[in-house]
Length: 484
Image 1 (tube, rainbow, N blue to C red):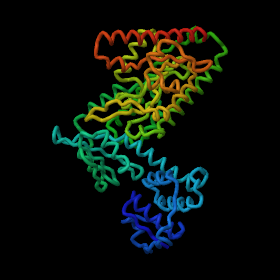
Image 2: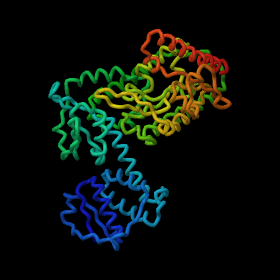
Image 3: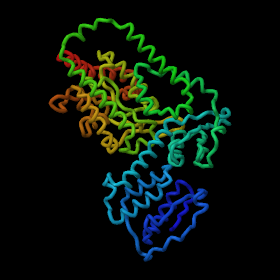
Image 4: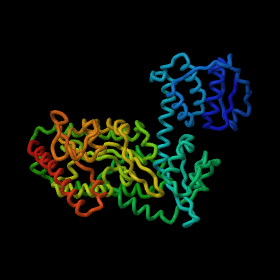
C-alpha cells in the first residue's frame, strides 16, 4: 500500500503530480491511500514510495475537461475526493470518453462535487458582508463566512476585483484571505469570536434593506432556496427578515379581507378561461424553473465577476416582451432588471407611450453584468458576440414560455440576440419585423443611450423618437387586448 501525503486540502498540483507518477508506474487505485499533512490518520500511516515510470519517455493523455473538473472538485470537503479523482483518472487512460457517461458512479460523483463547490463559491460571493474596522485612512473591512467546502482560495480573486480599492479580510474557520490593494495573502483559519459583529453603517444598511423590501414580490420558498437560512446569522439584515416576512403576510391577509365579494365584470365574462388559468400557472412554474436554472449558468465567464444572475420579470403571459442589453450596476446588486437610471428613463417613456410596465415582461439579452472596475466604480462594458450567443438560450426559453405577440429589442445587443444577427438600429427601428407567424419584433434604442447624450436638445429629440417607437408597441398591446 502506498500513502501519498499532500501539503494541504487543496493541493491540486501535488495531487496531479503524484497521480501522474502513480499511473505511469502502474499503481492501481486500490493500492493507494491519500491524506493531507496534519491528518490524524496520516500520523499513523506507513508511507511507501511511488514507483518510477517504466520509461522516462512514457506518458499518457486525458481530456482537458477532466483537468478542469478535477481542479474544481479538489476544493470539495469529501475526504475521499483525492481517491475518487485518481480512480477516474485511471479509467480515463483506457476509456477516453468516459466523462460523457453520466451514469458512471465516479463521473457522477465528481460532477456533483464540482457543482457543489461552484454553488458554495456563488454563495460566498453573494453573502459575504464586510464590516468597517477603524476610520478613514486607518479603515479596514472584515467579514466572517463559513463555507461548506475549501473554497476560500477559489473565491478570493472575485473580492479582489470587486473591492480593489479597499483593504479587506475574509475570516473563515478553515482559511483567511486578506487583500492589501496589491496582492491576496492567506493565513490559518480563526474562531468566529475574532470577527467583528457590527459597525457604524449597520443601522443604515438595515434601513436601506427595509426600504427596498417589496412584500408584493415576496416568495419565501424561492428566497430560502437562494439564500438558505444557515447564512442568515452572518448577515446584518438577518434580524429583519422574519419580521418583514411576517409583516408581508399580515398585509396580504388584510388585502384579502378587504377585497370585494363580487368579482369585477371583466373577470366574469367567460366561463371557459379555466384553460387559460391553467396555462398561466404552468407558465409561472416554467419561468420560476428557468430562473433557478439561470442562477447557476456558467455558459460564459461573465458569472465570475457579477454579483448574481439578473433574470427577467413580469406577467407570465405578457403580450409584450421588452429585451434590454445587460444588467447595470444597480441591477447587478438588486437582482432585478431596469431598476437603475436607465430603468427610470424606461418607466417614464412607457408612461408617455401609454404602456403600463406591470403588463409587460422585462428582461435582458445578457443576464450577467459585464464591467471594468475603476476604483469604486464599475464601468459598463459591451458584451461580446460569444457572450450574447451563450446567453441567448435564456432569452429563447423565456420567449417560448411567455409567447408574446411583440418583442421590443432595445439596443444593439438586444437586437442581435432577438434577431440572431448583428442588426443596425437606425436602419431597422420604427417598423415591425416578423419573427414567426405569431410574433413580431420592434427594434429601438436602449434607454441608457438617451442618458449618455450630452446635448439637451438632442436628448429631448431622441427621447421623443424613443417614445414614438414605444407607441407602436402600445398599439400592438391594445390590439392584443381587443383580441383577448
